[in-house]
Length: 151
Image (tube, rainbow, N blue to C red; front, side, top):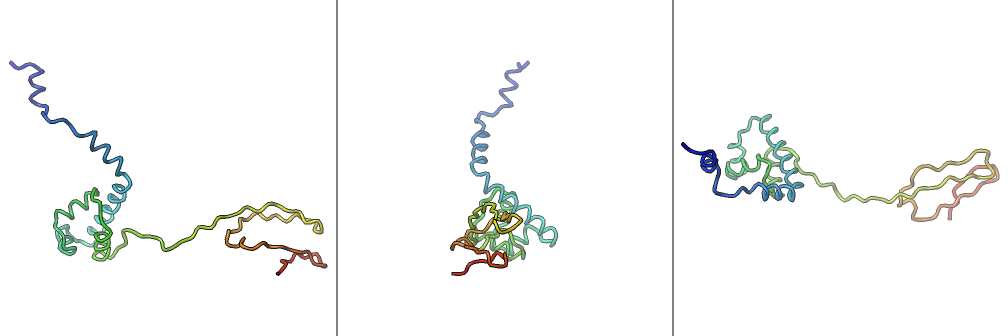
């Protein structure tokens, strides 16, 4: 009769587990794996909606069905070329890069009291940096109206 130890040895593999290496790899590649999974889910949803099989999609993209399978598992590091081909074939947008955008630094403006007025002028909005390129000066006219002084 076998002992418990003998039974365990028979069931266990002689190879060491690589779960730690795989976990470290997943953590190190988390960003693109997340994007790849989202792309895979989008592709799956679209091909189901359009009744396209994985085999047909592979033919349309001129790649192997095995490659489609890898893509749809969400663990394939897709190239921009592959993403573009999929977008064209399925008529969808998978990855969108914003056109040139500028971010303007905002400068807070303090509250000022203008002596010739009964009320306080509260300037609470943030003025975009691009509007602060030149100093703005104001004058109070004879009729107590605040006017922007022009150069």
